[in-house]
Length: 338
Image (cartoon, rainbow, N blue to C red; front, side):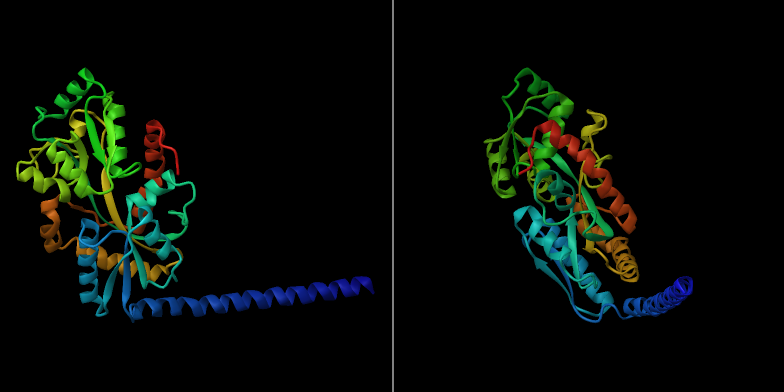
């Protein structure tokens, strides 16, 4: 009797498992056309791109350009919502907690995805788990610029002067843990020099004091530094990219003096984790098309932007690679997470 009941139970379990398999298969079959249909209909309402920058800066300007181009293609409004603050965590957290439907996207940056995980003890998002990469947008080198009154004209001049007078020279940054700060600390370590850090709350104040001679040098983005260089108010010694820039081909890279020194600041487009693959593919295709347009190149080339269309995987790989690389810089600088 017991054996018969056991066999009956096994038969029931077998029927249940078979029914479950059929149900799952049917659900999967139903979901796949639905996902494809979602991508075909997408977007059917306005898209919001959350920018971690205040209005008017390079990141915001580029976000609005991409939004305008996507709106023209999709026939739906694409709105840029500025959510600056808290070292870009406000914008990143907003998108990380949004529905993964393709209607809330993020201008993802090196600061939010690489630096914040290294510099903050408690971060309300995980850069690798809480987002879906869509495409890189662009990267740009920074420029090592010095006060016009200083006699240095090359990186070698600066290193020689700093070694003769350790602690005499100063560099500006936008605060501890900013890209300006980390680049300067990386430079100090590789060059073997001692240069004092002077943090500022904003680029405008730092540039004003650099031009006035209150600080001696700075690693600054092209949008902020190159107009002053062209106006003769600052001297550019080098750029920080792997190769010389298209806009200033006669300006050496730092790596021509310090082999291996290379660092570009980058911007990208992400969505929340779980964004359906067909929607990711559609967004990636359109963003890459925009980035490859000659008009996009012509609009941003004068400020040193290097357009960087990519696959989602290439974007994810860059984040994974850079986190341990910059962790080494942070540790060498003695910066403690806050």
